[in-house]
Image 1 (cartoon, rainbow, N blue to C red):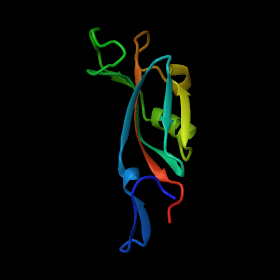
Image 2 (cartoon, rainbow, N blue to C red):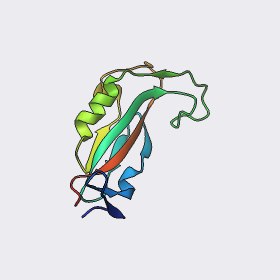
Image 3 (tube, helix red, strand yellow):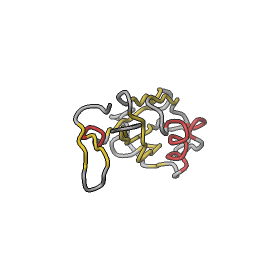
Image 4 (cartoon, rainbow, N blue to C red):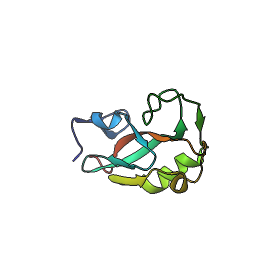
Amino acid sequence: MCPRTCFYDYYTSRGVCTETLRTFHTQTCDGDTLQLECWPNTVLSVYTARYGRGQDTPCLPTAPVSSCTASANVLMRVEEECKKQRTCQLLVSSSTLGSDPCPGEPKFLDVAYKCRPSRCF
């Protein structure tokens, strides 16, 4: 059984759960733990993961901001830890994520993900 409202799409011959189409977005500061969670019978599907700082840095909103972000390896690292799981926890740090785009500066991890059905219909 899928979360929320499900229907059968006769054109694609597949079940579709409308809540799984929603994109969730979270930002986690350096030293904190990223926590992603989906409903029962759904799994995580990470779409973007950026590590660094920018104009909207949540960790130091009053500090002068210089922009810097890490490479695509951050997305690969988050996917490795969280893909096809219902919940995921990951310490946000340059050592965990494999790069430090702004040495000595506070950073954050920005993640967008969906909850896909692990099975539906």
